[in-house]
Figure (cartoon, rainbow, N blue to C red):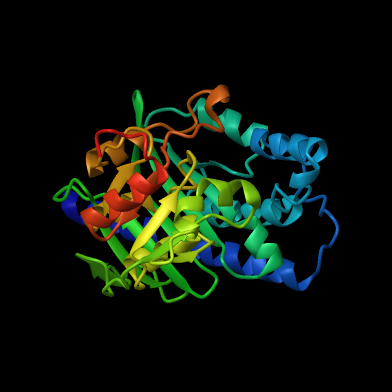
Length: 340
């Protein structure tokens, strides 16, 4: 068997495992909804399970500011249980791989941070969109990234965003195309050995509906950041954004997606797919247009040092089907930028 054939089979297996793990995570999350709030399962809660830095900050804000007294941090039992279910599926096929991410424990992070070259590292956000998950039972996703440790960097091999309605946007790195390749399909419609899972995309599958924008703006802090969009009568603004809305860019008719704050890699797991589809991405920090090479550099470091576990290397940005719309929205959100 040639090297190309072996690489193809390896990617097929990786695709199968990522899809299977996504399915397991989403089914686990749905079952947790059916059980109500429930108690913390001691099998899912270990001695080093703790609030992340982001959750701790949110909790302190909740205590100090009465205006912020809403649930700013995720449902920990459901998140951890779903993370554990995904972890189990991954380790069935890749027993020596490492799993980190939003709900990883200190022990899981520590092992990954000392991983040797050649190790597979999975970064998981088990329930991305915890507030929509709990309040609406939709508008959330399971995000899985796969990296291979290569010396001083980590090569992103695959990124998948799966929604509870069965859809998955999956990006994979490919040698012929530096930007990689993106597919859309159903996460439950897969089987090992089928290289033609889903639909390979050259462009977004559906034409955009002009003026449609998705942005995280469920709570007051985020509405303040997105005020210029919410006040514009020419736009149709959806206040659920991020990874759960990214399928709208690749598969639906969403024209633009906005992130008004810096993101972790698992928050922005969809970004390699968007740039591979030729979608314009403009940074709201300096006005630059992010190329696929820029995104690749952002997605080149995972689980390196303990102080970087909550790193947010992805700047706030506007992603749009057209360059002109991306620039228009970026100017609305960051009027101080002179290079736009």
